[in-house]
Amino acid sequence: DAMVIQNPRYQVTQFGKPVTLSCSQTLNHNVMYWYQQKSSQAPKLLFHYYDKDFNNEADTPDNFQSRRPNTSFCFLDIRSPGLGDAAMYLCATGTPVGGTQYFGPGTRLLVL
Amino acid sequence: GDSVTQMEGPVTLSEEAFLTINCTYTATGYPSLFWYVQYPGEGLQLLLKATKADDKGSNKGFEATYRKETTSFHLEKGSVQVSDSAVYFCALSDLSGANSKLTFGKGITLSVRP
Image (cartoon, rainbow over the protein chains, first blue to last red):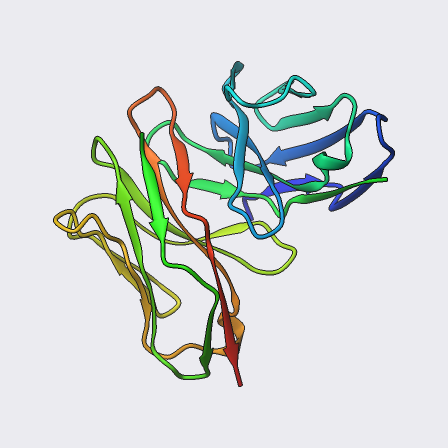
């Protein structure tokens, strides 16, 4: 089945220690998105790629970076995680037309 | 800018009760409208969608109709089950740019009692 995969499902890191979350897709979609979701809140878009074009949201902290080496994979790098970065991180994919986004299961990040 | 407003929650119902979750939107163009469901500890799953006025999306017994005149997309189900307990997000898609973004409502938690 075509899908969006996120690894790991749970990630524990230490305050200030860089961490990378990964996302892969078999849907062959042009667009990949990264969201941050805190408890009892809606997902908040951090950035997205349209093919290799990177689009950062205006209020995304510089601490968050992303890489997309090819169509299938996209990474979220948190350079110096703070306690406030503990959250669920959701990857999604989509096409430029239509608007539907398909989400992965998420990675829950815990910062100690 | 675009926005989505969902009714305040949480909502608690008994099994087999009728469900309505209200959603209204503000948008400058002609957005597509979505309902996503999130089960505990999971990502968002697309529940249903509608892409133009008067379209009805439906899935798993849930329905919602795109009402342009009232800018609404209310979610309904005739008989809820315990397994429907989850968080429900209404969203719209801004198609004005080269690639689309979703604007979400705040979400509402539904709990269904046996």
